[in-house]
Image 1 (cartoon, helix red, strand yellow):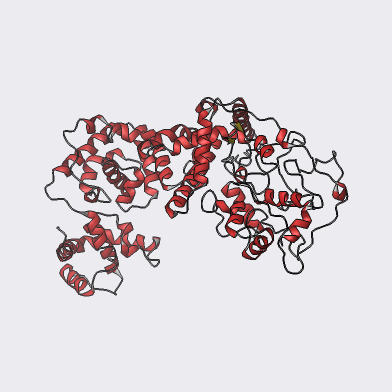
Image 2 (cartoon, rainbow, N blue to C red):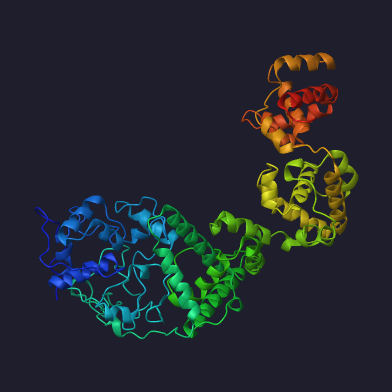
Length: 611
């Protein structure tokens, strides 16, 4: 049959079709349109023209065919098909926007944005899984959920979904080869339930004389998973999350669920081994073994390349997985990890983190961005890299010293300064950190003290208002303590400091001081003149030495790192000005120090804080 007629834009006012066709529950847009054409026994191009889905400029359906539909085309479609707008929206892949996908307002006028969304959000804008029994019973209706990798089996017929057509051995419903999502063989009357793929080159004529595969997918073989109730239960859970009610909180929960599932599934694809999985159907096991072998082979080839070139890094987390058998192994384990309570989540992630560190030690922190972890996963994954939780076992809450303490430590994180007091550091901790900068080592000691209260390194940095990069530095400090043999001594001194702080009758609230003085960028001029007069120094220009003195006083009052002082955080005070501060620290500040401390006591009393 020749490829006539071609797409023709709608002319004149739209008219409703004589025969009404009710869509199947959960049916996809392209499936409904094909069944509508078959119902009226007309070519697909004819029904598309009647529905107003042919662009006058490009003479083809819009780029987002089956994905999104703008308001104009939606109204035309509703008029012709006699379907309510809400029903039509459930046929489109955008029905999962805000649930399993984040299309971020993408429209059919932005095909590149839609294609990028397909890769990033894990959806099949072309191609689909399918259940042969469902196709046969529904007379060729394709489910919308089959266009998501989260659909890997059919709970109703208890079988794995198929990926390929067994007759042409190509991806089912793969569509055009040019990247457009518009349907192929538009001059033919569709045959619902039959494979409409173009045959591979060499097996059929090309161009207008081409023909579809035509194999009946309802008779395709399928693998039973009736003996694997766990797989079926997970699939039911996935489908429940895909159908949240209109409650905003339910949609937000579903979006968070699929975001974590996408991150965890990508991590499993990247670093999991076959030993991580339990009992699986044979096709799932074969698909998993094939994936792991291919990943390891790519890694080995990359390392063996000559001339010092290692080639591109294999990144199996980029792109949407297309094998339902593989996903039937990945998704249940990802769900098990996602369902873990926060205090046990890092234990579930530990084997994956260890393998990732062995495979790409220089990129372990970049994994937080690569896999787009949620805050909860970020914290747990960070714990996995804390020298395999060495701190918790040898110095933290699970250590013998902490466990044998008569009572919990009687201080809060707000009572810990950003930097351990200098005298205490010099006396007890400085010899343990011979290769670290003083301010880094003092910050680490303060973070370690906060961590005794049950916080993670990231939380400890946040409690102390330290840069979040410091919680990554803590891992290095833990490793150095182990390598240099100082860890046990560090743990002893840390707990001694904790006891001393607990026994203090009056504790300083450093967090409150930081809040009160968060905008302390300069010393008031009258106060500055008094301080300079007492120190027998000239006042100088406003905003000069007074700002450096303000940075010193802020650190003195808040127990903080002077580098983080508000006076040094503006754009005008960069690295060069910090060099000036260091010079002043050796010359002018010792003369100003006693008088600045007196000023600090007065400011604290005026703010209602104890000295």
